Image (cartoon, rainbow, N blue to C red):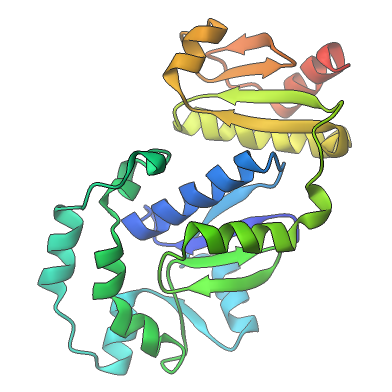
Length: 246
């Protein structure tokens, strides 16, 4: 894996806990104005298996831990917590979709599995990997801790915005929006522009309206809308960057 990435290793499609942690990490990366990719990696993938093996573990879920450690879990309670999620405060509205079904009570219900995961030889989802290092597994860590860990791992990437160019990807989180965001990061890497550009994800519909973007994804460079409703390739993005950067 790249040392300039954040991985959340989890189920595919993402469960509430995996999705919540992924969105939390992305939200923090956006707030810190980092151009660091946040990737959801399936725990059954070769990448996840190789990373777990490097720690002497195998990737797995709470059910895998319960089965291997012979933990008598109340799965009916777990499923009821997922089906009847506790509403989170408005400050967490960045975390929607499957993530909206996460709650601290869900983590507590699965705590017996988290506590036994290492003894069972399992790297339990959700797993947070930052810059190639395992920082947390088995539950959703606090936002304060994730913020601290990301700052610790990428302190050299965090600095004043000053004269850096601003690239914004507008979209509610659809597949094309996420792909466009990834393509922007690849374009910056290819053009060697990471140090002079800040990439921001914009998910607020009111901001779309303000910028005159009615169809997403949208791409904005230094306040200028260069694309609406199109999934641009890496090379197309590089052309727009060359034409619109200071």
